[in-house]
Image 1: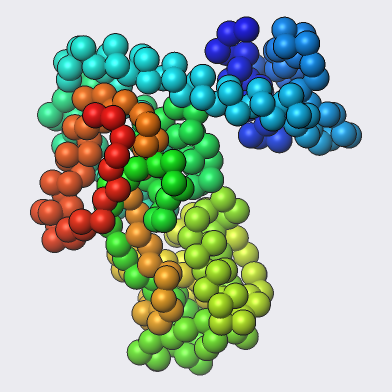
Image 2 (image 1 turned 90 degrees about the vertical axis):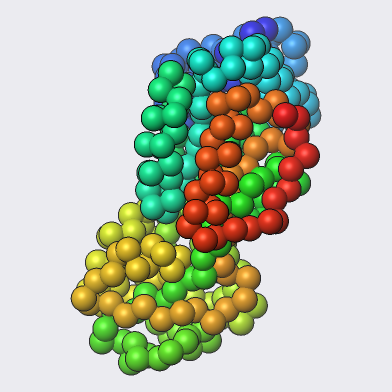
Amino acid sequence: MNLRTLRTFVEVVRQGGFSQAAEVVALTQSSVSKAVKTLEEELGMPLLDRLGHRNELTAAGEIAYRRAIVLLAEHHDLVAEINDLRGLKRGVLRIGLPPVGCGVLFATMFATYRSRYPDIDIELTEYGSKRLRECLEVGEVDLAALLLPVDAGFDYQPVRNEPLMAVLPRSHPLAQRQRIDFADLADSPFILFEAGFALNAKILAACERKGVIPRVAARSGQIDFIVDLVAAGLGVAFLPRMLAHKHQHAGIALIPLDEPHTDWHIALAWRASAHLPPAVRAWLELAKEQQLSTGHPDSSSRISGKA
């Protein structure tokens, strides 16, 4: 049994199939199948029930998956502590960011970090929130930018809190309103982000609280395209205030969304039990500096992990 085999098995479970896992671990589908079979032979029990195109964990598979996640994370922590001895002269910062808002929030930070620590390698991963949480769990990234609230197993340092704006076509009958809520928009089709984006969950949960069943006209992971769709009259969308203003368009109207618990509150999160190497701690310090310099202080951090 080796760590690569364990990671391959974990990805089969997480990705929902052998072909999907093969893309993530950069192996052929047959190599992925062989790795899982080898693990099953070593443990002496089947780990997956293959039901057509679906794979479900057996009782043994549930145990193997849970333990594999711990082993992979512990291996990462071991390497991180050893690298800690090198201080900031060498090392790697592995950070996961969502496609939404990362440029506005972190582009200048990357430039500053590189100028301060030129010998630190930066490995950037971009996924939606669900995938980023999974990457954190198994130690594939040291930090990930996630929307609050985060799961109990993570600690975090807040970065920015922005209210949502409703993005309406200029021709929309409510485009002149000062504020708007989901009840007002019940008859308007929605343009949402793709599946896996945490902002969708906030929007849909708020609609449910209002008794609104949204009609989804389109989904996209690209803000520019979403804004263009709104301007073309396809529907209404919802963006954090700073992103809405950055993507201002002559064909849209921006109206504050009057809905509680829908703020885009983003934080840098890490496993609560993780060892944070110097490269990671330096990034967190830089994030705190930027937060103070832009006038967005936030004292709601939850920090209990190992330094």
